[in-house]
Structures are given as C-alpha cells and as structure tokens.
Amino acid sequence: MVQVNRRRFVEATAVAASVLGGVQTSHASEVPAPPQVSLGKTGITMSRVGQGTGVRGGRRQSDQTRMGFEKLVPLFHHAYERGITFFDLADLYGSHLYFREALRTIPRDKITILTKVWWRYDGPERATQQPHRTEVVRSTIERFQHELDTDYLDIVLLHCMTTGKWDDDLRIYMDELAKAKEKKKIRALGVSCHDLGALKTAAKSPWVDVVLARINPKGVKMDGTPEEITAVLKEMKNNGKAVIGMKIFGEGALSDQREACVKFAQELGVLDAMTIGFHEPEQIDDMLRMVEKYPAKAV
Image (tube, rainbow, N blue to C red; front, side, top):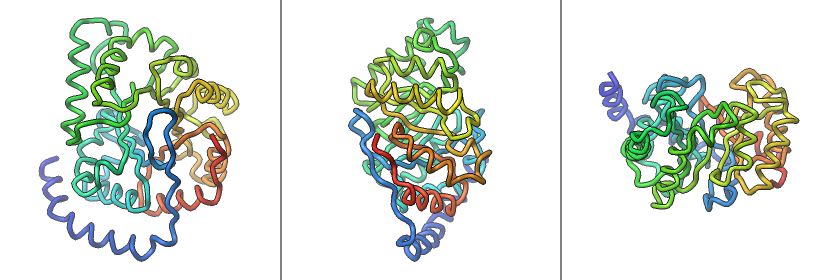
C-alpha cells in the first residue's frame, strides 16, 4: 500500500507542485517569512518556526503521515516556500520517508532536520547496558540516514524523557550518539521532555545541546505550570542550551486562543524556536503572520 501511494504521489507531484507553486507565487508577498535564528551554541541556523509531524503520533504514524504523500509532501513544500527551514521529524511518527520525498526538490543544505530516537522499542529502559544496545544505536542512525537519503542529521533527540534519571538509564545511547556527533553524522544532541524532573536533568546535563519542551500559557499537556517550566527553561539558557518549544497550542486544545499562545511564546525570552504541527497551508500562513505581529523577545 505504501508503494502504491508513493507511486501515485510521484505521478501527481509535478502537477501538484505547479498548482501549489502558483498559489505561493501569487500570495507570497502577503505572508512574512519567519526569522532565521542561531540555535544556541550548535552552529545551526534555522527558522524560528518549525513544521512538526507528530500530532497524535505513535506506532510510526501521526495525523500528518495519515494525510498521505499526496497532501503532506506539498505541505512541506509550502512551508519551505514560505521560509520555514526547520522540520521536526521522528521515528515514532514514521515521517522520515515522507520528508525524503520533499527532499527531492528541497535543497538539503538549506534546511535543518530534527529527528528523535524512540529507544523504548529496544526493551525495558533499565536494561540499556546490554551489549547489543551499542549496535542498536549505530544501526538506528544509519537507518535514519537511509530513510532520509542524507549523509548527516542536524539534531537528534532521545524521545520523550519521563524520569529525572534518564541520563543514567540511557547512558549507552548517549555515549554512542556522542560518537556519531564526533564523526559529523550528527550536528547536535538532546532530549524531548514529558516530565518536570526530566527537564531539570536536561538543564544540567553537559551532554545536552538542545531541549524540546512543552510550553503554553495555560499549562495544557505540559509538565508543570507555565511558571515552573519557564524557570527551568531559563536555567537551560543560562547553561548554554538551545530550547525549542512544543505544544504551543496545547496540541490543538488552545486553537481558539492562537494569538494569545503565540504572543506568550514570543515574549517569554527563553525559546530559540518553536515547532507546530500544521495540517493545512492556511495554518502555516496564519502562524507566520502572528509571529510577525508579535516579535520575539531577545533570548
């Protein structure tokens, strides 16, 4: 079924690109491009707004991948044409192959790819010191490169930290990912967090370059109150980490309060960038207009 869908996409892609290109050309002047930012100390420059692919993600699928090649790949192109150069992927979402199709025409050296390792597929988290885990990490990075048809990955995160002891439990993953970074296969490392203790550990860990953290003004699908999370994110910034915000709209629960959410995120002064799970081109355009309306406070 995937092969059939991809064939259908390839057959239709020229027409789709032509139509989408026409729309973008006629209205591009009305939509401001997002600012390009330097991501902490990583040496990476990317758009402040990123396109996420993991709304209600799990079992290697998400709302975005369930859209199919015919809808998701043109959405990637729309984002890129609007100036978005940061794309948030993950093994758990199954989004690598979809973005590989977009990379047929999007220049690899013009964009930043963030992806995530779902280490739970490898067994109980307390068993991470087993010798075979070293090979698992190596083969996982090689698989990611193959799925995306790229020689390097910009940012690789350990996905969904839920305990303050993740740096002990996942030490072998951290060590092997650090070796991949030394070999220039990865540019920056970090974690995505779904726990306050995990965030606090990430703020102190010298291994961490980048943290993906849940933040919005109402505390929806977050790891603490906005005040608690902001305090930890400030500590991260003081320790030289880059911070990317997620769940800016509470995974859609705050979609009727979008402007307030964007204003909050932009004025926090602790976010280097933010990732949003778009479903439609109009959502991308709407977000970029709000980002211009509420300029970011200096990080």
